Image (tube, rainbow, N blue to C red; front, side):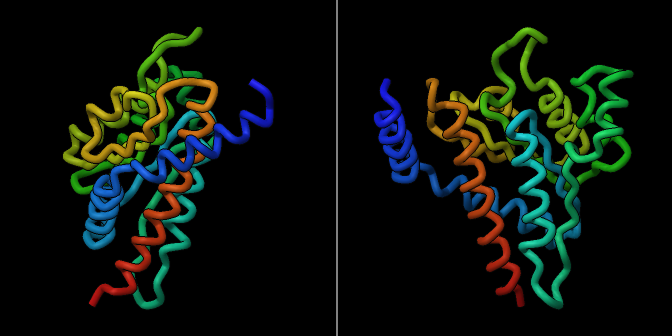
Length: 204
């Protein structure tokens, strides 16, 4: 594929997703997060690789961009951002432990875990099954009667099965799969934060 065709196909794929993405899933995610804000509960975000940066970005925007003067603020933590703690849990208990073990003393009923993953915890690589750290954290959240919001792609993977709301970007093949799924997750997270801010502003 010539590079010029790659550019054209990339934008065609983004346009196709724009035209077909299920907006009800966005509304459902906003509803869950809005209720979390109203109840004063905590949001935890997580992801691996490029999705780790999206998890950090989303936590930042949820904490800062949604601020409305005179209103309560979101309580939100990115589980990717404490590098010493992530490396300590990896060293002692393996990479699969890093999110659930950080959440263990904190997560409780009404909290929300937001996960970002291209494949949603499906597939395998040289280190074994992908994203088992996400799967363990989602399981802990459900055990504690929390909610799970997933951002995934391809067939949604374990995340689609476990999440209360899963926003699956409908791309199912490479070379466009990973870059478009990761890019569209950022588009969605900005939309969600913007919508949440407007709902908080309208709160009586």
